[in-house]
Length: 209
Image (cartoon, rainbow, N blue to C red):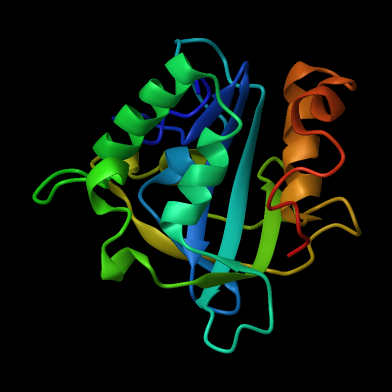
């Protein structure tokens, strides 16, 4: 769980070595997402203060599962599946991070107390999963360098919405599917053998988007 930083105040949702991953979720049919600042779409500084070598935006589309005809999951079921893959001491860390995620004016999700609440029993289905390499020059976005002329503007205060195309550069950007995307990030961050060792060939939830 050391790679997940989205539960706290961090510029990245996931940081694996020098590789950063920003995760965005939508219920729309396209990869349309709100960007809180240029730092979310360009390589910068790692959570430990180093230089970030790569940045990916992982766009996930979900929809409420109503007919039961496609694979689906609930939040409690997804959390249970993750817990089954973790050692006991790591489970505690994960649940603490999960509880902290989104907490502010309201409490975060406490798995022990809230797993059986009706509002968390809604089933969701995956529409798509797309991993965008944000270094691709074919992705046209507003970046920090574009704001350099405006000396009175604080670049990281700029928020905007992006609508990324389904295809950018052939079959390599974006990478499609949960399992393919996770494998790509792990190979980039940890080496060519790391994905198979960590995910295995039949990782839970590894269905193409």
